[in-house]
Length: 244
Length: 244
Image (cartoon, rainbow over all chains, first blue to last red):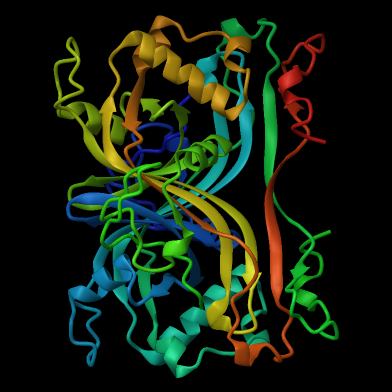
């Protein structure tokens, strides 16, 4: 089966117009599928809103799904102040009264994947998936600045539903105190893309197996109001067109 | 904003009918969302086929999307023999002529997430997502047994498109030699589920913001035949009903 797993283990080759490739963002194989283009990376990061955040705990990897948002060249992830990665990001810079950005942090890998299609080749080996993915390596740091924290939380809400942050009750002091925000700068970043049909071997073309692509998309259904919603409250414009 | 990030950092409480909880599979918060039920875990793992695999490289986490399949209480992931995690899984047991299962391995965290809905609360803080996720902690080991390797590769093809493995050309020796398979036993496993509507504060019920859930689903489109597909080859039964 054709390898669907990106890897990152080769010599870096500088490309001035995008994120500088590094040894861990240049793949050994399928190099043509890798991209360091900022515009492409931003677009892919903005289209999705669930990432998988990896960090190391007691020497072992942990991978958790979470929401994120991009503001310029920085990603934000939020969570309870009691959650593991958010505590860990803060642990290396204990003094919350000063900006510990320079010395605190948690090494993370934040990965965003969009599945685009199932690729059925004539040979089992060349089966694959079409996808777009972005992998961000870096050090996540807890955000202490209150304005940046508020902006990050708004960005996460607006990332999932554009326009929603202004159409909800803002967090109060107690809620803000219970929420931790970590940031991750977009510095060591790569995208990987597979598109198109199967790459069958020439000698397999005549085999009697159906071959092609089954497209996969994410769809929104009709918004379901909460049971206790006042019927006088109309469906907001930013939700129209999301569902049927 | 309501925390969408699971965490795992509390005392374990044994539950005899499912996977035994451990310190890293019992969450500190939202305990009611965690499950160790084997049947539920199997169902969630079987419904999806893209996972995010985390491992540690030079002390830093790496998270990559890849396909997987479940066979009983074991997961399989495949990739090029040159890809990083597959090489790493093999590196600790160099002798490929004997079964190195007992002493080889790569610590991994394999996470599968299905997004089910966007939860819009009246307060920004209680916004959330509905989702199902499974997190598997363990040690991935390279599979050397040829019969198990072939069965695992068939399982991965059939996991994505049930029935497809038998309706494609099996891997030849060269292809098999280029493909590595790693296994991960289901021992330290937890599911986490959020369903239902928003959990607004009682004092927010009267606020004039729309509140409810926007369902999210994954859809298949009409299969697109490859340009070079012989028109005499019909769409197979296992693809009918996947698209429009």
